Image (tube, rainbow, N blue to C red; front, side):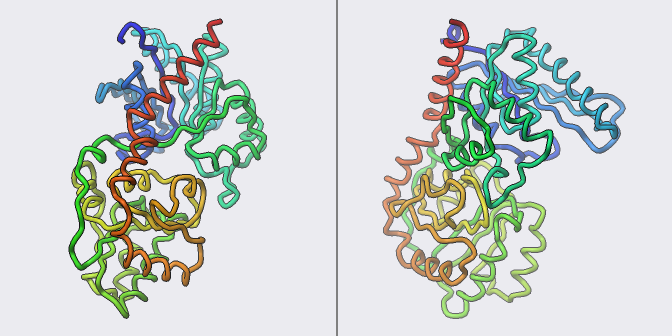
Length: 389
């Protein structure tokens, strides 16, 4: 197997780093899944708004992935910033390439990292593929703009060997902006193997546990809408506890909102950020997951819930309906508080009737390291085979 492995360089715009260990965690999981079959390196560039005496370099090898981090002070002049960015990319690229020749680059999140991959193709003849996670192309978000950004992104996409949005919905949204390529293929976000390794726990307690896991950014996640619904629900029933897991920019504001609304403490809990087994344990104890987003693509927390055998109640936004159906939960329209309450009540009564093992089996077939790793490896090999003809 070692002799047959290709060296794939990941170029992510988002990636866990010293300042934010959760930033782009789903990209890191893609890298780990791909490393099951191929040799994977990651080059991550981070421009900082603070002065550094020198460019700072960090190197790690973990879970089969080599990562090279380059931290540097962000130049105030845009032209200077561009040239520093390009110079550091080629420095890092050559450092990685020297140890083992790079066969293909894999961009995660456009557009600037795609420009680097295009330059590597022009300078060294190295093909590249793109995975897109960003919801900015969706009509409800509509933040993909710019007289330079749009034509540049079209050029990058045109010359990529494959485009891999994480949902079909995102694929169609990208195409609506004229991001044309003959090889679009959906490859889903991956779920950490730990979620499949932990057993499914049968629920018998009278109090139902509902979880919400997110980055606590209320504009998109609409966590305030969940809190308001809980306040109404708790007035006539208190046989549930809503558990909020995570941290982020609006965490304190949302926690204060819950206190202001005088929700009984037995009905609500904020755990803060949890990781690894502590996080999976919360999934195991839960009866179902609740997502109330105004807009999303396909949050990986839904994939994680499925891996733990949990049904999900979610707003029907982005690509969520591609995986969430009546066998795995319920869908509701966004910004419909009365429908939200009705479906919340229904889930409280029926959440334990879903087949947890079938939900987990579905997750394994779509989101496991093995499944996604196989898909990525196959696409890499096909791409290299075509380019070497």
